Image (cartoon, rainbow, N blue to C red; front, side, top):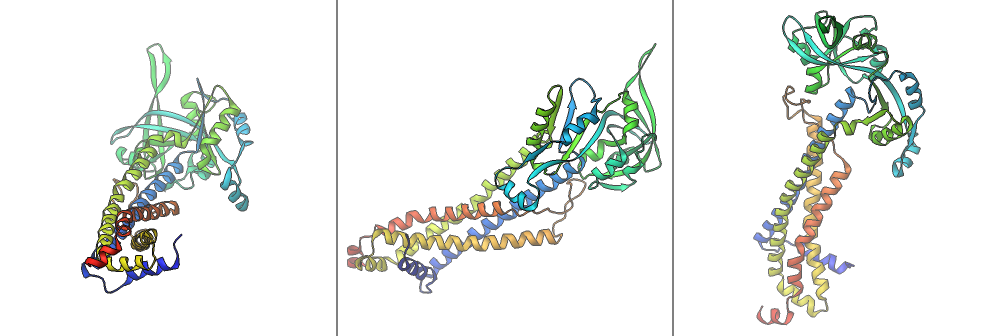
Length: 424
């Protein structure tokens, strides 16, 4: 346990103006090095967390949390299946449950179930051709489901079941050279059997809307059709998928297991994290790699703490000898110099956290750094400061600073007072 005497001596050594100038300079460099390392870590990790959040929100803006399919064919009794799913709920666990009780959302419930028909085909216009993935959806319901989706032109309410209309991603519309009001021809491989064989099915559609997700694959290859038209084109009576949105998307995996248990075979249930597992795993790995790499800055700064303490020990040999002759133990001397190094590291961490949070605020508030929107899905650096990340960075920096104090503090504790006082 560190006593008041050890605190007093450590602070006196740290704040004394009588130290050698070079020792003060090395100490300042140690504090600055820790501050820069902590600041860089906070900014980079916060930007990467911001990218993850933006990507997650854009994916969930166009995709559902959970998808239910039937193995071997369409879901013909989808209204009955939907009623079964709507009755399910999942209780949150641990601290999330207690916090949920306070906010009134201790249970995860189904918010919406969207029946869809999935088609693949080829769209052609006078300006070109492009492959397309089509989602047949009920227009009125989709207007609520995709309320966060940016519609540049048109409305999902235009997707009436009896109309041959389509809404396209903006990149797809650009590649085809079409805009709302223009005609496109849809060619589907699911054709009709004739004496000449199976002929592909053709349908002329009117473009009634343009949407933008910010994700290249969706903007360049996705289109929306009315649900009834999709069923007729696919020649099915049911739907391909039931797309489910729940109150808390982070419980999608557990809720998907609950649905699978309720429906049983031949239904197949998958959540959004499983569908995008490779993408988010790569982002997590990249975030961890950046954390390790930038931590090396703090490691270098820790060596400056070692150098500063070694020089301080050399300057304070006489003081150490006097303290020992007055009754200070080796352990007390060890704690004094470890505490001095800890205070150096803590000062750097405090400055680094303050500067890092300030830079994150500036980057998020003001568009200082612009990104090409045709390459990235955002036009400015997204920033998300998470308390866990900041705490972890600060604790790691303080731990490295403490480890850096061990060797010089032990050398100080081992100094023989008689020889120091005799030979000066």
